[in-house]
Amino acid sequence: MFEPQTTPAYIYDERQLRSDVQRVGAIARDVGCKTLYSPKANTVRGVLDAIAGSVDGFAASSVFEARLSREVLGGHGSIHLTNPGLRADEVAEVAALCNAVTLNSLSQWQMYGPELIGQVKCGLRVNPGMSLVRDLRYDPCRVNSKLGVPLEYLEEIHRQVPGRLKGISGLHFHTNSEASEFSGLLATVRHLADRIGPFLEKLEWINLGGGYLFDDPNTLGAFHESVDLLRSRFGLEVFVEPGTAMVRQSGYLVASVVDIFVSGEKSVAVLDATTNHWPEVFEYEFAPDVIGDSEEGEYEYLLAGGTCLAGDLFGTYAFHEPLDVGSKIVFANAGAYSLVKANYFNGINLPSIYALTAEGELVLEKKFTYEDFARQCGVVEHANH
Ligand SMILES: Cc1ncc(COP(=O)(O)O)c(C=O)c1O
Image (cartoon, rainbow, N blue to C red; front, side, top):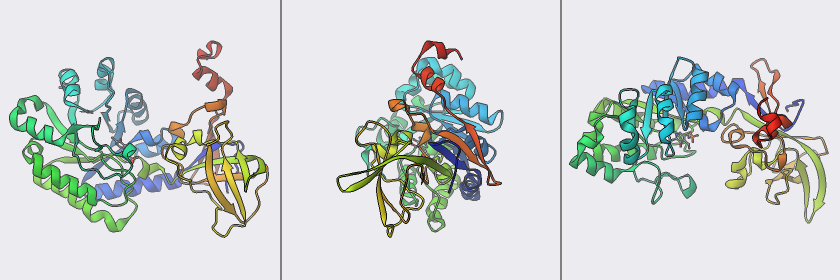
């Protein structure tokens, strides 16, 4: 399917990317909601550039992401930031780079509010306490969550010492993951309206976070209802900050088979890629989509990453043609939380980055080198190059 000059390769399909960004943007615009792309999902320069012109801004998770966002957006578009690990020595830079900063806790607000007020819009992250995600590792509403002020606490503070919230102009929550429908969002919005309506009335904006795929037109009713409720009843400017929805489908990881042998009952095909190029495959134990994989395929292989780690495995796949050394394996839907989490474990090089242009040309944008690896290791002779 793809024949990049070098593998491993990360390829983003510009046409698909632009179409996904337009789709999500149009859905949000339709209901009067603003879109901030969440670069935590993918920070490839060409990807950011392709998105920048079609969104209202970026939603950063750190000073580095805020700097990157400002470089890419230039003077256009707003940057919102929320980060439970914000440090005192980062606050001035964050204030200079961002338009809005959401404080993750009341203590963050107490520590950094005085410096931020007047420079940026200040928000508070709330934990609505309504779990929508089964896997605890992804659930911001889990017991003893580190993410956001518990709703009951916020309600109490607003009732008893509202002065502590003076200067807060917005609210943020992010409570879902990979969701194709919005019933959880609507339930959460209604719950917030019931519990902290009087506080919402004083605010100017609300950010509903990411975690929605916007991939099923039949489910959009609840999204519309959620945004409508917040806009019409409380007069709020509403934001969403999707990552995956915009970048997942357009990304591919391409590997070459470097060895094939039989082990036990399986034919093992070792790749020049590794799950360290897409760590969530290992962390969350899912088998990514592979082009050409078929239930009827006669030739079955265990696709293995090329590191020393025994569990560095992509999964078992079946093809209609046998694989050989040099065969290409194309993992699809690889655009989110893949390259951005990739690492150099075992000194295996990172995938080269290619754009598949709208004209169908594969253009090499970045090839990582030994020097990049050495610099990251702090090897001095490479550190200044
Ligand atoms: C605060 C926040 N906003 C947005 C996102 C983007 O989520 P997704 O990529 O699932 O749309 C995340 C993901 O973890 C997040 O933590």
